[in-house]
Amino acid sequence: MALPVDIEALDKAFSGIGVDEKSLISILTNSNEEHKKSLRKGSSKLFIEDAKGFERSDQSSIKILKHQFKRFRDAVMLSVLHPWERDARLIEKAIRKGPKHYNVIVEMACTRSSDQLLGARKAYHSLFHHSIEEHLVTHIKGRERKLLVALVSAYRFDGPGVNEDVAKSEAQILYEAINNGEKNKLLDHEDAIMILATRSKQHLQALYQHYNQSYDKTLAQDLEGEGILKDTVECLCTPQTYFTRVLEAAVKEDADEESKRALTRVIVTQKEQLVKEGFVPNKIQDILLGLYKDFMLASIASGDIK
Amino acid sequence: MATIDVPEQVSVLADAEALRKACKGWGTDEKAIISVLGHRNAVQRKQIRLAYEDLYQEDLIKRLESELSGDFEKAVYRWILDPADRDAVLANVAIKKLSPDHHVIVEISCTRSPEELLVVRRAYQARYKHSLEEDVAAHTKGDTRKLLVALVSAFRYDGEEINTRVANSEAKILHEAVKDKEFNHEEIIRILSTRSKMQLMATFNRYRDDHGTTITKNLEGDSGDEFLKTLRPTIRCLNDPKKYFEKVLRNSIRRVGTDEDALTRVIVTRAEKDLKDVKELYYKRNSVPLDQAVAKDTTGDYKALLLTLLGKED
Image (cartoon, each protein chain N blue to C red):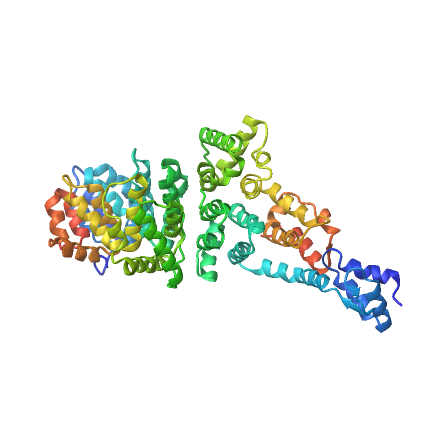
């Protein structure tokens, strides 16, 4: 007979992000048929009793389990690929998967350096025999297309020397676009898109400050609910806010699979930043499991290794 | 094929000395400058600049700028720069004009290879502390702006694969646009700025096969709105760049008063690329060799430099 503590341990081994491999080894290898039978009966997650009283696996739960087991593998792959190939593959996947994933495209285009983005574009050619912008226009028919193509095509200047007057006047252009025009037409606002897609990050950060000072709220606040527009502004001006938001969404109670995958992506690709920002892994410690947890925590810990 | 005539053995040290000698003292020996620089390729010119800097602690370009003047100086300045740096300068000049020269921006973004365009963008940033697309966006508006920014930002796939289904459907879209003169700008910009050059060739060929005339013929004329005026060179450059350059040369010489800017630009930027082929096209079209037409229309050292770059023997 399986003790309640065993059943609880089995459930717990699958109740986080990743899988507690050690615990599974110790429960299952010491388990005979009787023991396993009561594990199956007692497990709330993996098995159901069908009409004939047969405890069969619940396929949808098993499917979710597959994702959990895959996490360590995915983390390894993501971390070992050349950053250009990695980003190119992330973009291609996001294009294929649809609107809910467009923020990944924004993330790739806006949080990488100009040269890294260029590298990803080159890698994309090699891997997929098309340019990113070609795939974007082929697969995305919605209004996000303009902004996404523009962001991905940018080769922003990276250096000091911001013209404060221009930054201030462009803050005003954005303010008027958001507050005077129809909000849902923002994605078609040519000037707004040009500003966000062509200006240097330094310029946009100055613009962000001017916006805050002039209008008593931040540009991100004014874009609340505006999906990839808000993501764009955050990624360009306050990336740590964006990444924190993504990480917190990943560890929420009801987080879906895509949100959880973001955890791997952000930690693996941003570990230097996370260390710099003093990111405290406490929040994620409790919810991560097994080898995946070890990999993630070690990544953050070693983030400052160049 | 290139037209410049580069000797087998080159000593950049000797060249630097020769240039120094040409600039020293009263007056300048323009012939000497032409005879050295006019026969050196981009790599050699760069080495000469470095050697000159080493020997005389002076920037050769600045020295030449101060010694020379007029169209000759402009031509030498453009010729001596690195190709990518040169394109950056040409683009900036075109953008900053009171009435920007859109066709120059089109020319640079559509006739250079995808890799070359990237290097131009980098060179532009290094020189002007702004991105090329930023400056283009700031100095243009409307749909013309959309087209130009898209063209300069493009990093086209440069493979050989073509999709005939896409060629078919996009030839249709382009035809609708051209025929009705109701240009669905979004679609045109999308096609022209994202497709690979091979794919676009397939599309243009399909257009020609389906409608009996080339798309450029359907776009003939000089009039129309700003967008149309920018669209024409775009399609011409993407469809047949050599033919495009022949036309620019023809127009620059034919006009009452030569358009030296255009003449210099084409000769200087294509001398190491395909000016030979352009010369042949010119002759076919005009029954007059390009050398002859240029000689008739220009004078002095400027003329001498152009003819040297065209491959004329000294």
